[in-house]
Length: 227
Image (cartoon, rainbow, N blue to C red; front, side, top):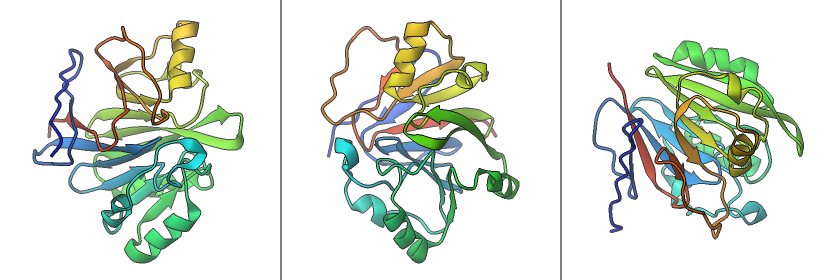
């Protein structure tokens, strides 16, 4: 079994561990699958962001087939766009046939209101953002048990993100994060998870304690919340 690693951040209490053991109540559990692929659950709702994607597409991260085998029935899948390192129509079709579930992406974001109305203490807002390799790209702001989680996808634009307030955890790709540093744009987030890294990508040093680079697949972030 892999060694358990714990990271205690000063701004917000997150625990990142290297196995997939979920044992506590009143927590949003987020598993990093690879690229921008995330699995989130509060024990009731099972939510996938930018997953399933084509494993190893564009030389980004591969994932084990067990990830697909572990998907629960009636999960929710949300995609920022349909590039193969974020989305696989073929795999998704098979998952829907076996497990049903609801799917949202850049083709039907208006239907997210139906999801918001059907789940207690949960909303997801689609934010149209730019990505030069596709005409339609959306980032998302999830508000869940009064915790705000931002999902950047592939956008490099800071315009919409810079307007958001009180984010608990912002998942950002590295070029968006570097744009914020370069342009000295302040992002109102307590914690940053930098994802969509290459498997062998080197990370520098000297980053603040509230910036974590997601280099290890299957890492888990726990976000405690109050009833």
